[in-house]
Structure formats: structure tokens, C-alpha cells
Length: 158
Image 1 (tube, rainbow, N blue to C red):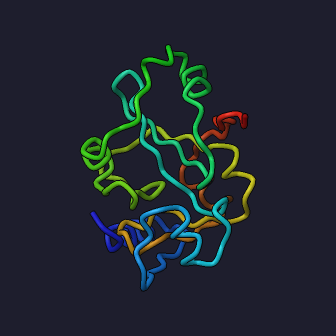
Image 2 (tube, rainbow, N blue to C red):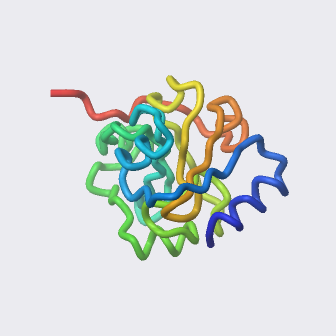
């Protein structure tokens, strides 16, 4: 899948979001933030975890490290039962390459969680389906579209 598929999904589901095509690739949070002139906290990253083998998408902001223990506690499983999906698994479940995964519009329905750090923003830029595209969306629209619960999954700062 690519940014055209995501744009079609946005249009078909009447989502208020914009696909932004850039002149540069955005393989990292820092590169994405620089490309659209925002702070890294305004970059949303879609992280796919396997919880007892089942996919769970966590949308966090660019600087947040997800706390596996907090996720395990929420999912009511042992921490060892949670793994970050590898690139092949990400592609299998979402249809997108790592670094391009949007928060919705995947080839398979995914359980989705919003990390509180995302909710603290007004608007984010998230994966846009290709390495040189991002999707701009308000947090209120993201919450409406994903209908995902928000919770604190941020790793405590040392």
C-alpha cells in the first residue's frame, strides 16, 4: 500500500486529514519534524506490537518510548508476552513499510491505543504511506477515526 491508498481511504471514510508530499524522505522523527517545521512531539509514530501473538497498534508521539510494562499491565499479560513487530510483520498486518505506517487505513483491522503524549497535542503529522509523505490530522479527528482509548504508556524518564 502507499499514500494513494491512504488518500483513498481518507476520502472514502470522509476523514478530515491531509496527505503532505515532501521533497525529502522522512525516515526518522527528526527528519519528519524538520521537513514540516514542527517539534518532534508533533510527529506521531505508529508502533505495532504483538501481544500474545495478536497485533496491537500504539500511536505515540515522536519522542515517547513506549513502556512495555505499562502496555502489558493494560493488556493484562506478562511483559514477556509483548514483542515489537519486525518489519515483515508490520508489512503483513498493515500493508505499509516500517517508517510509513499511518494510524489507520491498514489492510487488516487493528486494535489501536493512543499514548497520552499524542492527546496532549492539537495536531500531528503521522505516517503517510510512503517515505516522503506524512499525514496531517487533528487529534480530535484522530480520536474520532480510531475510537482508540488513550492511556499513559510512556516510559518514565530516568
